[in-house]
Image (cartoon, rainbow, N blue to C red; front, side, top):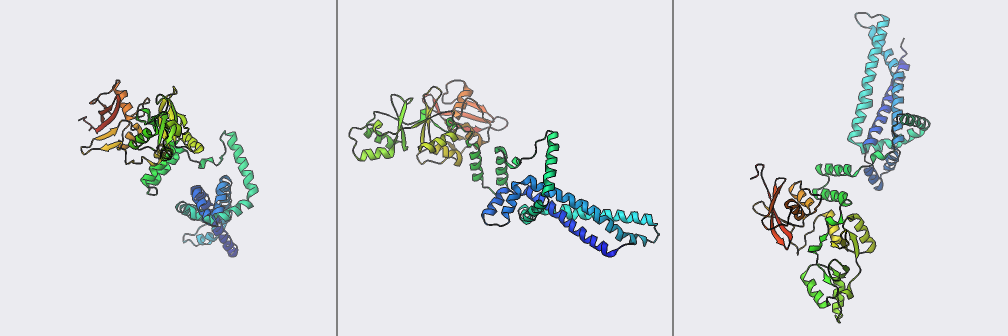
Length: 438
């Protein structure tokens, strides 16, 4: 015989157990999906629940163990309480069937109906629905469940520690390292993918995406890739009279000028225009460039730009002389050169643009433009391990000194030498060719 009050009490327990199962499922998926950076931001803004979420994320393995234990306990309890209670309620209904069922058949049918019903309710209300809610709104769900989950974790702590250690022991036997929480740390390539996805979704602007990608690539960039080469460097001899230095400075748009002894291979200091003007205003008195120059720093061309930036900050200087492997001057690099690696090229009113598009679709390019910049601008794949600039690339393909009119074809583009500066390629025209090569 069915005991109706007891069955109703059992049904109430079933409802509570389904809700408990839903709670732990929502907690598990929300903690896995939520972004810790967003939670830290919300905590800084004064959200009272955010610190509880951050605590759960800080001990994510323990939090997930709590949810798993809660789901398991709720499931076992449902099987123990729900099926007998529902079967007891369905059995009288089965006996009312017009065909007349034997007691054994009625009990079996009611048990089957009870199992099907409780399974459907548990899957729909206790699994799929809370999972969908957590995945659609991980932040709100995590804020809602974090504090009760902490209480549940405190109550179940002895069991969680025991089961966690047992699980780690099994993992070690299988030679699988236990989770350490480092899985949430992203590599540089993963961060680039996240930035690209954010830009595609409209969260990050195109210019911001480019700057972020430049930041990631900054540490891998070498000084020789950003320096002004010696052939383009402007300097003055150490014994140059100040009036002559002032005249030369007026012809060149630089605020710092390297000073050399004998030849540009022996840079001994740097003249700051501010010091030069101060000395000039107080009277030249026969002074020369060496009398107003400051010390400079030297850096090998193979050093990383991040290392050079650290030296700039430590020495409070904005210019360095770049040395080649033989100790000679390879070029000069300034703080603005490093900044342009992140923010992009900043146009100088005194400079011609490195890349000038022409009306016929051709582009006129400065020979010192980095190959990587040309590849990005024109979607090409020009590569040469021995050269960093487009002029060097053309020289490498020619295999000899260049002359005006020389051209090479690579990756669907024609590169033609348009101007020379002595033996150096000064300007190159780039023309995209169609598939037929016309």
